[in-house]
Amino acid sequence: MKATIWHNPNCGTSCKTLAILQETPGIALEVIEYLRHPPSAEKLAQLYRDAGITPQQGLRTKNTDAAQRGLPQADDAAVLAAMAAEPILIERPLVETDKGARLCRPQDKVYEIL
Image (cartoon, rainbow, N blue to C red):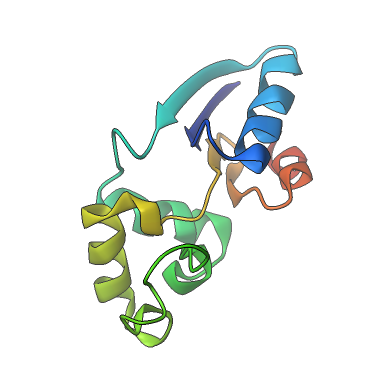
């Protein structure tokens, strides 16, 4: 099974999720450091749709200016555009497999798509 993780190596939850993926037999893993290589607004929209959450639910508000910018109340297009332009606004880690996508907070959510 192929799995892609949008990863931040400075995030404990992201590192724990990555470890689960690395320890799971049969996983062909792609690791994308999303702060260096951010997903497009279109890719984010697809990931959130596949995860069954809204872009606002995928918005990182901790240690960002998202709340001051009104992003939690903004429409999907505005949130996605902000995330694509400033990937620090993307909550992590996002994982995608053939079985779907998840925002893996907590990291055990990854098991839902393995």
